[in-house]
Image 1 (cartoon, rainbow, N blue to C red):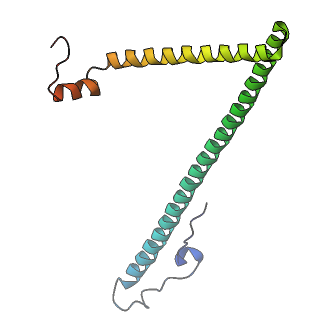
Image 2: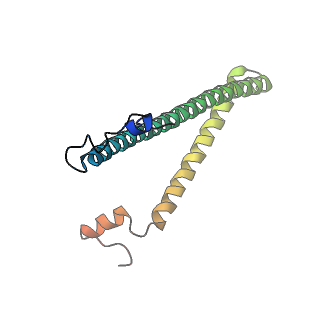
Image 3: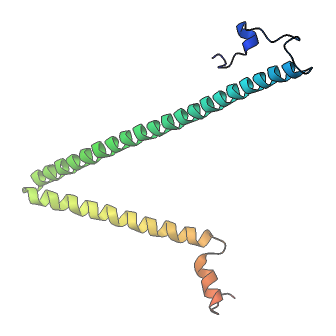
Length: 153
């Protein structure tokens, strides 16, 4: 990328010579002023380009996260439908074994309820262990503030 500002001296325009200068050194001040203005314009353009690059990076990151979320949603829907069809197939097969489709659906429902109960109990046990491992849980702090004593105090 080329700088946007090119001073007049570089373009081939001639600087005013010493004969054109009224007070001594004023031509240098103009040249320095033009160069400084040009550097400032180049710097401003560079800052704008850096901001645009950062904006494009953020937009790319957001697009990537949206694509990942869409893929996860599609996988979740496909997994849900696959699981649902597998359960219906299992229920129909169990119903065929038991002699009536209703018995198969009842058996699959019972298995799902048993699995849900086991997961619930496991979750409660893990939560209780986590609460025991915390050094000063919120509940024990509230009990000591109310004047109540824990066993062993």
